[in-house]
Image 1 (cartoon, rainbow, N blue to C red):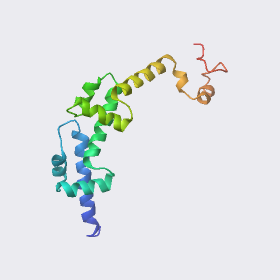
Image 2: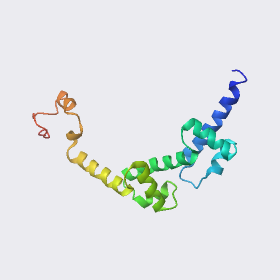
Image 3: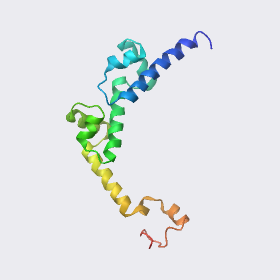
Image 4: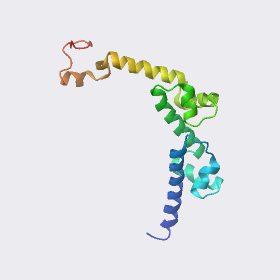
Length: 150
């Protein structure tokens, strides 16, 4: 490895280390100071490097990770407020607004839609399988879109 490449690899590793810090500690009360300290950079230099590598600022990345984890919780039996605080938000209003901005719907609507889909899958699983696949495996006895007789 040439001496010119070494500093780039070293810098990249430090940024990846900071990203992994976010991934591990997203639910905690972390801020830019904590994250940049993990990479041993000044805040402003760190923001520039992080954004050049990941395409978003560390704060935006932290928000995206938290919302992604909240989506997983909301797909389970977790309430909106429990999901909010479990992923590290301090305010339900902030969480709901950011969730809607990123996901495109309110967290309560997201959870309700997911629960309704799960109920539909439970009641009629073959409607969620492509007909050609179901037909190929002998799951369809009827030519219409009805459930096969079991």
